[in-house]
Image (cartoon, rainbow, N blue to C red; front, side, top):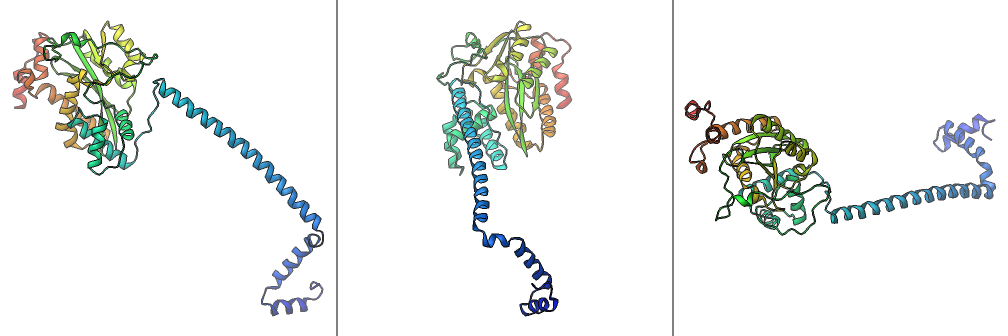
Length: 355
């Protein structure tokens, strides 16, 4: 229409304050779709086809969603089954800054009050301004490897996958119910504890000689797995004569086949704390308390490398310089090597070097 009359085209564009090029584009678009303006059936057909396509996509999506829901329900029921059967269900790691702060506080509370169970810890955290429940604190205890020092009734069946060995140290208890071990390498005890870092955490595994309180081997890792426990055990057996009895808790790292096989191959009797009774392993629990109050908390490690260096130095001092009242104010090294008739160890010379 305006294409054969440029003057008229420019006049219309000028009148309505638009560009001539825009006017040309509008005309072109109108001519291309003019049939739709007069043929309603074509428009309806086009939209019907689009609606049918959308319906097919919707049905396909609904089917997929249904499959996902079924899979989700299956997984939920499976997890419930696993929990009721006492299988291990992984705990989601505590990763945020607030989580880290909470874990550190729980660690301090447990070290100061090792007899506190989850109920008391929750009450104390609530009084300190933390709005947490028992479920969260239980997860934190599991994540950190914490067990309260009090008897707990066994309400669950043992996991058939991992055999739980009986506690063998009851026969060494005195009239007061305290375990009395009279010789070095008679009983070794082991455990894992949580070590707080500035921007994370680590796990410390150690083996202690029950009689002399000497730390025989240790290792710091950012994971709490069977490799951590087996490597510490292998180190101790390489450095010292094997013990008659090896005592641990019932944690999966200690009941795992890899760990058990090392003990069996060395003909070492296996002893495990009763479920929920860390007091059965009191000698290592007391060392954790000493270590944390004298080294870990004051040092405030920035990273695992710094923690490893600090703990290594502390254990050297603990073994060779720190006087223990329960040892008649002697050092663990002094008692261990003297009782082992090691004539090459001179306790007086060692102490004079640091006095």
